[in-house]
Image (cartoon, rainbow, N blue to C red; front, side, top):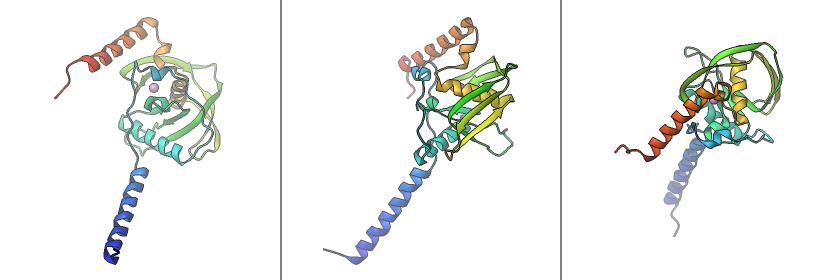
Length: 203
Ligand code: NI
């Protein structure tokens, strides 16, 4: 049996469904951030062959996740994607968002001059310590369009780039602090993870 009106209904219905599905695919999504002592944080992330729409979607999800946290930088592995991507946004709270995208970033030069910055990490929440790093770095990377770029970073951008590129190599900022302090924070997070796994669960 064939009914024209029903067929029309069916068509408009399916068009709506398709539109909804497309919206879903285009909508940005928050991704859970993994935290210490998740062993994935120690993985070495793999380089990417190209920048395509699927990767751009992931980069946009990373920006949304970073803004929501809120943080000023996020590496792929922090959302359990072991690929060499990171996003940084240094805009202040009263400024419009200004996300920067880095695919396969590489530090090609670092200054002898050093700088100290009090660092924190979305994967080690609410823990801050001073870390000393090269004050300036030159980095090569692909942007969101897959175009090769190079920047000379100084100040907070230099610190953020070095911190995030470290994530791609399984390095955390606590690796630069004293063993005593590092052991203490790792133990604290291991204890919290254990309590979350074994402890009483809210109703
Ligand atoms: Ni971090």
